[in-house]
Image (cartoon, rainbow, N blue to C red):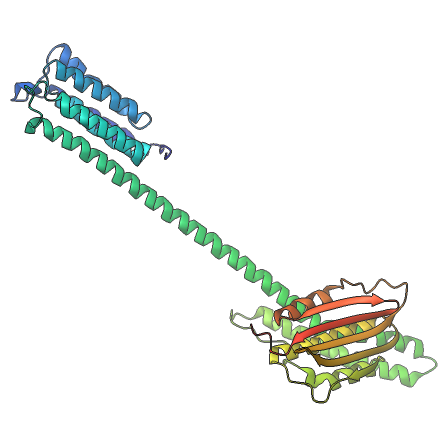
Length: 385
């Protein structure tokens, strides 16, 4: 059952109009004597007018009061237009406020009672046009009440749907912002983490070799200068991307390097002091561009962790195809008491898991004694469903 609506600004005016209409029909000098009420009958005919202001909160009570007045006047020999008009106004309110089921039963029952009771002052003629017109008016008022209620419910449903759609758009916008933040974080890690680790390691080398091996210190400082320039260029590209006014600007900070760049990558790590043993299959099947780039990032992340946390500056990289997938394994030794690399990994491994999952691959990490292993499986079909 729909809840009653709070009265609006026009409610007092409609109450005045309803009262005036009922009073006018009660006191009007109708030519037909069957419609005229005098004396105490006029008082009964005016009772529904006093109930009109309460028809919104108590429509059923007002309808019953109007019906009782109409029936009483009928038994007194008067076909009261005021009571019947009050019933029509109340019938509208009942269907509008109490719903279709309650309204239909109530208004139908009231119309049936009026149909039979109006025959009393008309000499028992049930189909007298003077009585039937009021029955039709009551039924029409109920139908108008149902139409008003249906229209209000339709407007309410459309408003609610629009609000849900707006909330959905806001949720989608928040989701896209979160995805963009994750993407920027991954890009920042990809372009900065490796170079920062190279700078850190070579700074230690330069500090320890400055007095005894100045040529080694100079090489380390050259590597630091080169890596610093690379980091500054990459950060500059990231800032340019963030400041771009083009919402469709999705350019990458670096070209999409694939496994074809493994030789250059391992050479960079060897220059930084990491002994990399690369074992690759010469006839390895090609990956899709997206999977190829993710595979490159797997090796980059594995070597970066080996560079940062390795105990003996040695890393083993193996690539093999098996069961329709490319398996990449990066092993390196870590100190037994070191907690720098765990099975869960840091931000780099977390971002790597997200990238690998995007191409329907999976990542496994863990320690076996003093060896830390990063193992990744990437489907050869390019992650297509």
